[in-house]
Image (cartoon, rainbow, N blue to C red; front, side, top):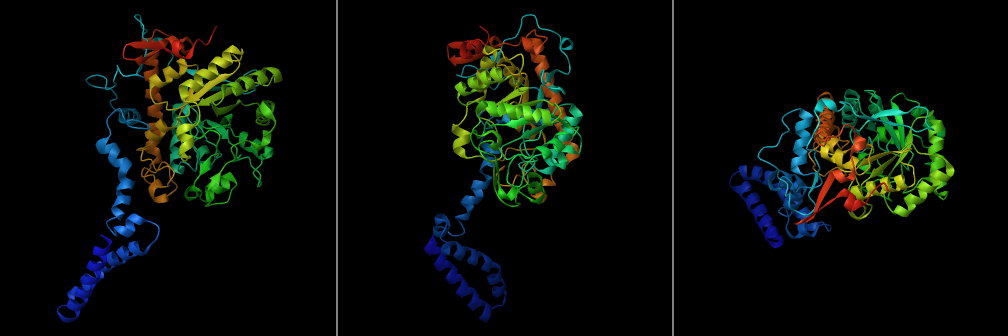
Length: 505
């Protein structure tokens, strides 16, 4: 192919010059039109970086075009309804339908393989309740005896996604939807931007290891700056991020392409550079579990008594058990703990961390709940969770494992137009959700997406309430591990109690 291009391009070049000079000047025009193709081909041959281009000039470029289109082609033309990842077509369609407030029912029966290992379902009651018997707005109060300003939270909220990872219009749409629907919007570790405050939706301010929004020039925690931002009326809770399910033990990553001047100013970093947060908190590094708890207490006092908790992906259960022992010894109680599953989403993470580090959602949440109960702490600490929460059944299952409230990230992204293009780390998101490219961002019209976020939240909780009624339960605290079944072999099923054990002795 390489030799063919060399000989063909040279022959055509000579032929067009000859014909243009002695036959018809029109051939000179043809030469000018083809010149960029010739130059591109010769560039491919001479460049040393890509062997495919060197060996197959011009034609080799099609490989990169097809690769860039791969995820979209797969989703639209190849993927089945239930086998796509991370979020399959059935679930994406459900989110779109609920966000647009259109028909979300399923015709002709389930597409799930109900006799396949891993299939899960819930236990309904022979004596179900009427939907009217279930409170329409189910909420949980977060804030223990050491908290002066407890917060009444929805059981479904927007999970941590930073401005920087997401576009300004995406943040505006999410916060406007949270305001309209009466639920909370987690800021992610990127700090509080003006876009978070525009609609005055309730905020959970997440503070990561980079201390963005409360950071000195050297990257240390700035308590005075924290007090100023925490005092905002929209800020209802503080969440200290210890680890993220998609990359536990690794700091957050903001690609240079996404780090524009405004984002850099909010974070207190140099613009147009890749920002990688430390994997640990400087403020209590080397101080053990007591250091973490003292920092939680420090944040609660500095915020004027707002609820403070921390988010983590479960690693070694022995460490979590030791942390619980230190809570009892110190008398310092976090108001809540959020457990993130190892399958959690992210804008950017090393493959090894996303695929092979951190306990998955179900095991992580059940482990945390069981240990909290065994230590006598569960009544004092609210337990939140995140990890592919999309449907009402996902919420029901999370409550069966011990959760008191849930976060959803990727489903909320889908609600505002995400097509799962898998380009979150490239700044080329075609839907304008996970990009800082102004041309792409303008495609996301905020006022229309606000309604979609609110609709998705409302309809998903409606489906959860229907499930609760079908189980004959009036209160989320009545959901137990015995309500969920899993097929472990073709002929054997187990309850969550069988699999994860009894939380109470």
